[in-house]
Length: 364
Ligand SMILES: Cc1cc2nc3c(=O)[nH]c(=O)nc-3n(C[C@H](O)[C@H](O)[C@H](O)COP(=O)(O)OP(=O)(O)OC[C@H]3O[C@@H](n4cnc5c(N)ncnc54)[C@H](O)[C@@H]3O)c2cc1C
Image (cartoon, rainbow, N blue to C red; front, top):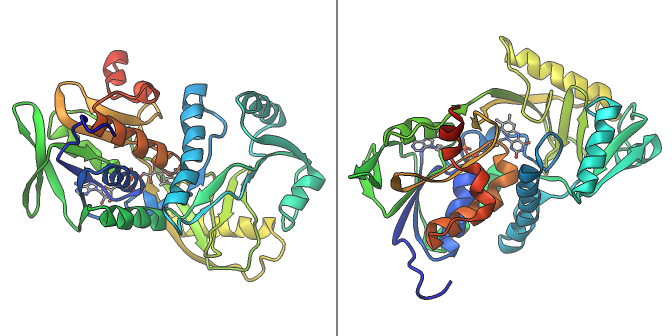
């Protein structure tokens, strides 16, 4: 950084999930004085995530580009933070009609994604334990997964080595303002002042932003993930089959949802988890001893139009927002670009489509 650039003296990051951890890590590495305040270490949505890192189907090109770049940024983080539990295990997908699969393949291949068509024999070679491999699927070797709580904690531990302070078990009750400028936060333990406040509080962002008169349009749909007890290796990578997305964690647990965003918990979440694990069992050879251990229900922080909200807020200096679904995929790029905007005080063009102000423009 040029010596003429002024680093904000003190930055408060609210939230210690994967987004707050990445932002705090990037800020601390750039020399800022960072205090992370969070009720819960490791986050709220983060521990309940499927944690697939991808730039897969269903997104417009500008969002694909951000996601694809973040995949590369995960490799950078893994180089800089030893022991990050990241696995580029690849994914197999046949979770849509063949015509849609063909269209996804053609589009993403054209965008430079490492996506390949695979036949029955190739699928069986990639995942030898699939009981009934389909005739056709796509394979994306460059997709992967991370164990998100361990990753967040490692980033925060490294941020501490670079001078950051962590305050866990602390609830932020509101933002403090002087005139319109955000100058700190009120916590259950008293006020804390700062030059800049970053709200990376997941679903908890809504009341905090509202305390400064800022409306964050957010949905928080629930998603249930079933976790097996640790088992011998049955899966090599991620499997996206119709009605069942699954992967095996580094610890050996098979985790599964009816899709990566989790299953609707319904009125009987335990039953939903048992059904998921039964489906896993029926799809995999060698799964005889596989047992359900527990299930999680997470609330996905999802801006109303589905895209991330990242950036400052017009008319409210000192405040920075970062709330998104696909936060596990996007944490490295969000941390990198947000830290550059906060410290460099310069807008990054890559984030232009993701400002809160888009909602005011469309009236959404
Ligand atoms: C079932 C499910 C499946 C998912 N699958 C994927 C996937 O496959 N790939 C992917 O990329 N993403 C996936 N996601 C989304 C991803 O997990 C989230 O986008 C991400 O975890 C959000 O992280 P975060 O740090 O923003 O929020 P969180 O993890 O929710 O952390 C919020 C933090 O803010 C703190 N906080 C909130 N309010 C306050 C307050 N008032 N005072 C103090 N602290 C506060 C909390 O204590 C916590 O530390 C999934 C999510 C779910 C639930």
